[in-house]
Picture 1 (cartoon, rainbow, N blue to C red):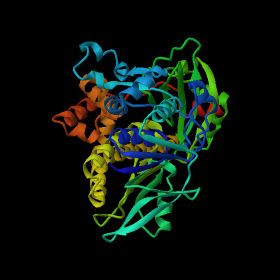
Picture 2: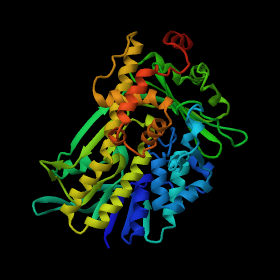
Picture 3: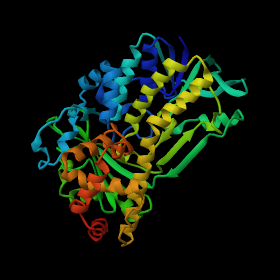
Picture 4: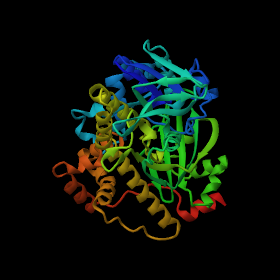
Length: 469
């Protein structure tokens, strides 16, 4: 069995550590944040310091695709999440009543998930990891640099050197440091690379807060959880223990809408949206937080068809991260840990073979999700920019974008297409696979041509500006 060091003790790092330890490997997880795992859900929300996770108290969601990974690989963790108050949510409940008359179908159980605040989810994982007999989790352990040698002409990572001066040797290092991964800097310091990187500002700002009900219930969603409302969007996410998150999502270039940082104006905008005003009916918990500067970024450690280095695997957001409005980050990270476990199990004995297999698994299973998300972000931002400048958005011309937009309309008029739409939203099946199925693209375009695009009720641009004046 191998010696594996995981950098980062967030969701991906702890999940990877537990899976690899259960496979018999000697695993150490290094987490820079020193704060211990809180004893209660409330303490985790109110006082847990997680400086390394920028979005720790922003809206959070576990899609059904992530739930599937936990159910298959860490069922005890999923049970602990349920016991901690996570909300069991059947996404098929969002199906319009006019489509639900045919009743359930085989496989509908795949749309069920459990959702909780990030603080609750990390606490559950932290407690489970601490009890894992063959897993060591060190909190407050900062890493200074990689240790490396050259093997067969390729730089090979042999371990890490901590801020304390201690060196940990490893057969594999896993970079689960998230969006703020220091790997590019460390590689540059070692004259390795550069990594292939694609990066762009997603162009969105989030203004969100959490609420709690007095009786432990959560509001019932009416319409999509992510609702486009002209020049802004509303994100509504049920959560654990009678809590939920609401966020207004705007273009970072829309200076006027930055006024929703004022809690009174934020509430006024939500109150003006008939399908969403009921999400205000709770006690606010925590401050109205804002988050911008979100980067869509993709990294691939391959040059001229050959790995730039061996001995380290980029995992989750350290590999690729996207605008979080679709809530896919955690679920894709869990899917990535599942892939890591499989590749470690079959290829770890040969570092070069492992690097090639890890790249192939990532490209096949994760990259399509990244591409879909970035393309949808660009389409939405293009629409917002046109509308706020008084223009009619230009219809997309490329087939993937045309089909994506058509599915948003067609799904409201066909139960099979609604399930297909949910499967893409829930990180179960990428859109490219859905539209490759016989007749799906044709049926989507046919129905979209027969029906108008749904427009959700809410303030016009002029009414919105008047609310914020």
